[in-house]
Image (tube, rainbow over all chains, first blue to last red; front, side):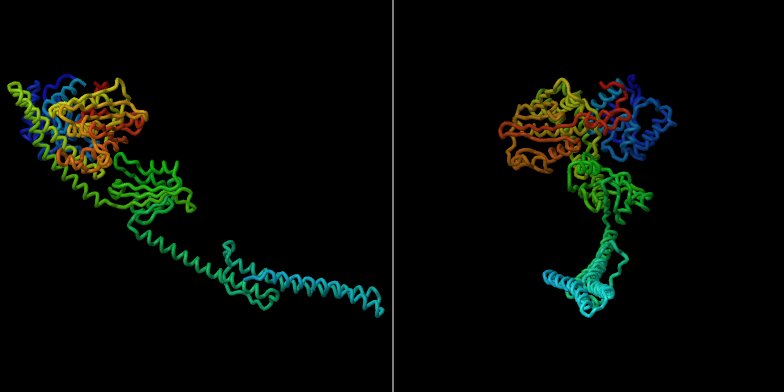
Length: 127
Length: 511
């Protein structure tokens, strides 16, 4: 896997999205940000991304619904795109199997500092 | 009361009388015939006729004295015999014709008939008791199921039938309990099936209970508390009696509590994320311009924010443990790798609090069945404790090795104040805090309780050795991967789990 070029952050907390944006841009990534679920889903379906950081608790649509939509077979532009759930909600047992099948990672934001996030993304690129 | 001596005496007398009649009467006729000059042929005929008459009289006597009473007693006994179901109990026969030992026979017959009448009343009583019992069992809201030695259902009450899948409700007798009841036990608990297998191997009588067992059927999801009583070789054929108590509404309320705590923790974690993020920005971008003292303060700020994040996670884990919602996802884990990455994370915190952390790993260790996130919580709590009870500049050592039982054992040792014997037994209890630590050390008393729950959920053991004034060593052992490899999910890509969540490993080779 080569280095990611374009990363989309779907995150409604502006402080957190700013933090991630700052850290990722400093590491040389091209970053786009969506502050709402509908906006994020539209951007994901129409853009060209290597990685999407998706918050579960975004307004308008549940992040799991967005994940299902982005991973549906009819969506072709995201076939090679990785999706990491970034959330502060501990994994819901009922949705666990679904999330594990569809997402490439699940991170608790309070436990992942921006630097750690960059490190994890680096590991994904080299795996 | 039978008087057998008297009976014997009377019988002997009567038999001698009969022999006497048989001998004396023909002899007398013979002598008389000779005396009066009757021809010997006629005398022989008269003797023969007299003999027949005497034999008939004797048989009549024998019948009245012995055969009739015996037959009457046998008939009476027939009334209480289960072999003859056609025998209907009625009044005793007339005893007028039974001459010999009448009083004895009469008493005996009355006893038998009274007994038979009593038995019949008893049988009616038994049948009515059975009906009452069955009605009670069916009125009970507690599902009750009895299994035979092949785990087949041999009794199930109405409430029990209500828990069955639709297809099994019409004729549940003979069905395999474990095939029709889809029970989901709390993580780390031995399930009923395994417990029963253990009983069959080595127990005669055993009881066990389970809480918060989930059951799914056509009507939805249920939560049950289960009581099972095992008895080997019962004449009834009941080997296992299972009571299932429906606690769905109670556990659903608890689920709402967990939901609230989850949401509250979500809200708490938002600001923690932001604080930790910006502290990191300051560390990276401002620290080079700070003097030594300010850098130290920055490190403390960073370590405290991280501790706060860990504490919040502990609260959530304890809530889940208390509610039986703790779910681990065991994976094949390289133990040295995991411990190295955990100590790398924790070292800055330990050092910012003025203690040293040393990690001693063996060159090789077999893979372990572990949930990386849970192991991080265990080690983190043990180290947090070690730091709290260690002197400044004290050393904390993490060591690991394969023990004699084939488990991978990990020790966290400190050089601190140690633990008095009087409180060592309570250390792993929920909210337990020793008197002295209440005064001098912060904490909530959930750390070791959580450690124990997490280690037990792995199927491992946890313990502590301590000597006052010389320090404490906490140890825990986990199973090698090969021990329960068969029960661990292996399908799909491997999830690399650690303290902050998981990342899917798409590569064929792990780093």
